Length: 399
Image 1 (cartoon, rainbow, N blue to C red):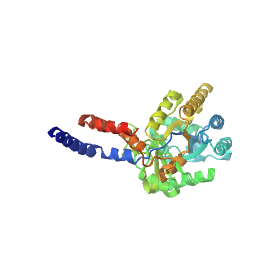
Image 2 (image 1 turned 135 degrees about the vertical axis):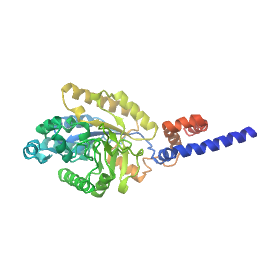
Image 3 (image 1 turned 30 degrees about the vertical axis):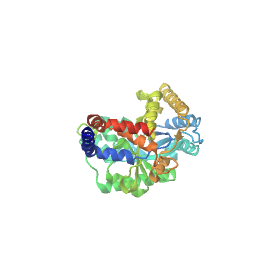
Image 4 (image 1 turned 180 degrees about the horizontal axis):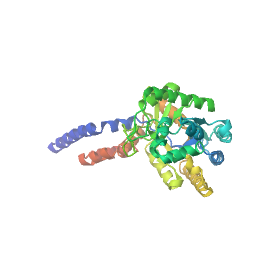
């Protein structure tokens, strides 16, 4: 009896310690919705302003995606994070003031037509990535002291923004000097509204999903997007707000989970699996990410960029081959796999749709415990306190 009392006292005390030190993680793991079936989305950024060869790449991708379907006959969806403009280098350099060239049927007619066809076929979903993939005043300032930036301007708007120094690719900070500086709130409001309006003029619809370039954005940006009609923001699982002295993303906030609400009822999506074949990522590795996310009741959002699909024939073919392998293995391994767009997923998570989510079930408890096991701090505390034993028993009972 005495031993039992000691054990109960031990678990009571250590349980309080666990909750005290890991309360946010415990609650977040429970609040995050649990999907009742695997979900796969391919998220691809940086399309739009830049090289004309994009149109041929988009058509190739569309043909490949149209080969596949889930059990409900939905095609795999690749979201296209659109960059709407780039510097008009000639005018900018000659005048000393920034001038942009927006994408249009005149400058990018074949690309826009290919995207439209893919959207109608159900394999593309367009998202806002930014007016530019940088903050124009910061780019102009940097060009006065950085020859590489000056040279890039000389080739704009055909040169891809991916060739700019990494800090300058962040749109929502002034990274002309480091550490970066916060932007004026009114300037952010105007720029966010302008890019939403431009997106609507080009594509005929307000963007429902926004992807912050380099995942650096602030509450000012989010509030402006929400006010302009954006419903969801794609994140890396946290929010960076600045660049440090070395140019690295900094100012990381709390962890973000799928279905979490941000400013003005915007819903967050987490994109933290990677599929960049030109950087060595393979279909096998990507399938492992799908397996891990499915086990934890989470959607799998793959991050990829247009540079994988451009360049040499060998490079492009390798990317398309790996993408085809990934989709072939995914539909074979997961017969109940669902292909969704990011806005469809955001709507499911926002409304807590019971057709897609386990709201109250043994599996939901099982997944919750599995998620807790992914938290390093909590896992260590579980082993030190002995709570790993009852947690493991509950995990087995709820399978």
